[in-house]
Image (cartoon, rainbow, N blue to C red; front, side):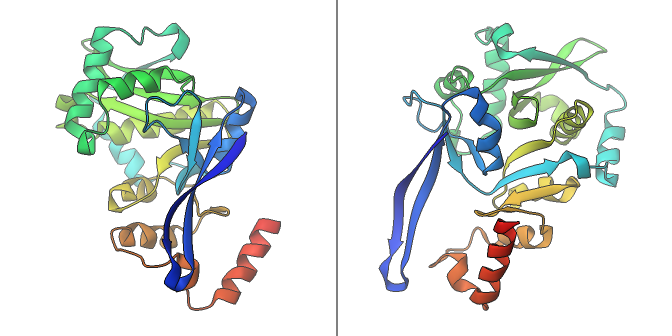
Length: 266
């Protein structure tokens, strides 16, 4: 794993200089370390030839601490009428050029991804970067109709729930997205993995992941932090413009530094 930084914004008046941090995966043995250090896959530029990851406020569940919540059980009851069948495919054994598969995912992306963030060119790039390892296919057993896909990164220790695509019609009557994420958490736990990563935790749109799943932690730039109350506060304040980094804004910087030094050391 190689780490590099790219200069971003600066505010010389209060000595705030920001750098975006990236990692390059050199081989498959790097995967777990990359995720444990808070990185997630970057696919925003489709001409990049290397597997690049960005450092962010990543979310994960420590599967040793996960138990079903009342919300998880409620969502599962909603799906009792169909109980989708799940098929797992290694991405190398799945026809990622299949028109029905592409059209299904693109139909969902056009309606649900903000600011046209996922076009077909980017989707095909994602499928061919060599980062994704598995595709999970969700099928209604009553009529054999495909109702969703999950694109994932899986090894013997971790699962990254990377992208998901749903049948919009089913979403009108069933909490399909929540159910699929919960089923992948349960799958990871059943297969004795240590962590499942759920993407980033920014803004109020991420609160459903934070509220609904036990054992959640977030990467705060230094450590994996389990202070969910603090995380909720961060998400709710993300829309506010900040003139400085959080360290400069806290009331007691020495207490903060002592806490960080202790946590990183231990």
